[in-house]
Image 1 (cartoon, rainbow, N blue to C red):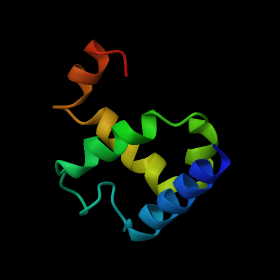
Image 2: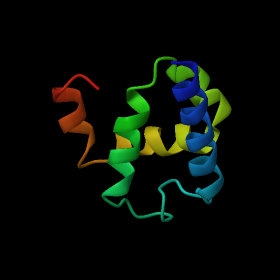
Image 3: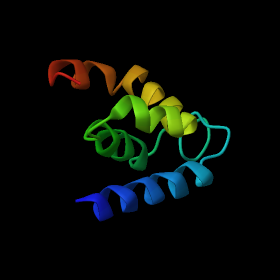
Amino acid sequence: NSAAIKRQKTEWAAFEAALGDGPFLFGDAISAADPYAAMLASWADEPEALFAANPKLARLCAAVADHETIAPIWRRHGF
């Protein structure tokens, strides 16, 4: 549905605007919201386009994927 895709772009843009200097949502420390946001972003139909339009989100997702606690779990589940 094109309306849903447009709404997703708007919502991700709002999330992007709320992100600070990171790498995580609330700065240097990971929170429960960070892996959740990264998981939602991983479901994007076109993740390359999502990350190109939202570089702070791309940074957050990379930081989550590289986090010492999260990385082994995500690898085990194919993320």
